[in-house]
Amino acid sequence: MKFRALLRSSAALWTTPVWGGIIAFYFFYALHLQDPYEEVIAGPLWAGQQVAIALDYFYAFAYAITLGLATWEGGRLKRDRVWDLAPSRARWRVAGQALVPAAGAGWAILLLPVVMRLVETRLLPTPAAVLPLVMGMGIVCAYAVLGCVLGHLAPRVIAAPFGSVATFYVIAKTSTYSDPVWPRHVSGQLSTSIAFGEYYSAVTVLVPLLVATAVAAAVAAWWSRGPRRVPLRILATAAALGTVVVSARTASGWGVVDGPVSAGHASAHCTGTAPRVCMAESGGAIERLDDVQAEVTGSLEKLRAAGVDVTVPSTVTDGLLYERTRTRPRSTTSTWWLPLTAQAEAASPGSRITGVRYAILLSAVTFPCSFPAMIDPGGSNAWIINRDAAVLWAAYTIDAQEPFLRWRADEYAQFANGPEVLAKVRERAAKGRALPTAAQRTAWFEQEKAKACRQMPKRPDGSGATTGSQGAES
Image (cartoon, rainbow, N blue to C red; front, side, top):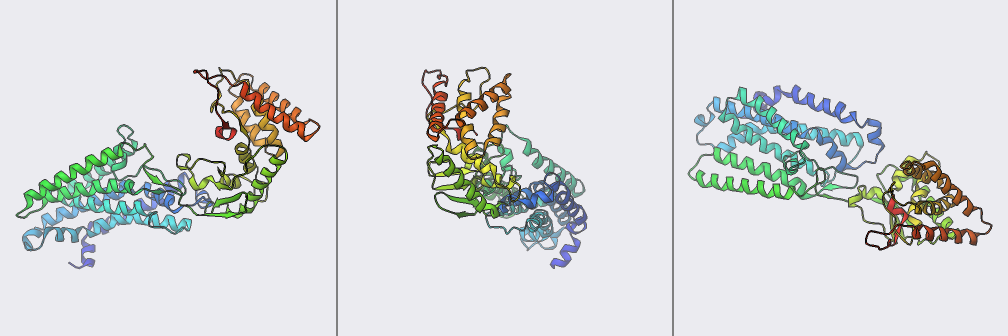
């Protein structure tokens, strides 16, 4: 049968208003309900992330509609007794030709939202960015096979709608699983979130694709005919069971929304030396790179001039390049990872970028001990006043006191006497700033740091704190 005639007779054509309407509604309404168009194009923009967002609503619909259409076509092949009319033709060739429109509809449900999203954001996809799309299109073919077999086993008038609804429910329901977690990752509805600069790892997309393909192959083997069908069925069934078990065991070790990803793929643009400052090119604030670099170098120079013992890093890199903390390399003395793009975007156009100076403060001011990550309202916290007074003194040096005071005021809210603590911190910092000479002010700063460490409560084992930095708390 010619393709044009096949398409005219296919259920995929006369159901176009249904699945076409689903694409239009979920793309133009649901997809932009949480993130309006203005916020989407404002950035940061990353092709892999945008592809994942565009597909999230459509996996279940694509699989469900494909299965329903394939069930209808399979039932029609049975009704028309195609196998009796052309007994010499291989069953898989006849079925494959009949299923092209059904699979094409499923592909369109996945492909169109991705294309529209990339056009909307003006991004060019990379091969790694479209891996989830390729995975979904492969799983659509598997559901087409399952639907065709279902159409031969049950009345298509009943099996097609019920099969579609059941498929949609099962796929959508897996996104709520947390114990066990593996159904989330093998169903074909990718639960792993993608951040800026990340791609899905190969195993993340291969696991659901292999499961769907193996199951479809086993079902097709049981439906097939031929002299070797019995060993073929046994082999296909064993392969499907093995694939499902291995995939489930593999995915059971993943997080609820944190399957394997590959990070650090976004391009950066750098400027300056000592330190060299790098920002994400597509982060949305690259035009302020020179301003950021000036804030970084100026803050470090002022701190060193004030007597703060700062080890100037060779590179200050944008944290957006590794947006998620769990994938980001740890800052070292030679490389600092700071939220440069986030702070540049938060600042008004043309204004100074206070957030960058604040980030420099938290990384530059270090202590000969480490402090608790969380304040214990019921414990001994005398060290807080000395530590925060020292940091506030340094913050005034680079005009970063306002964000620091806002942060500490929020922390002090845990105390009944929070305002009094804040007033005491301000008072001690003011005394340090009022000292007559630079040498006295620097000596005061070092003394405050030493006092803070001496007042740190001992650990249960009686040991003291180890070397750490203020920046580790933020």
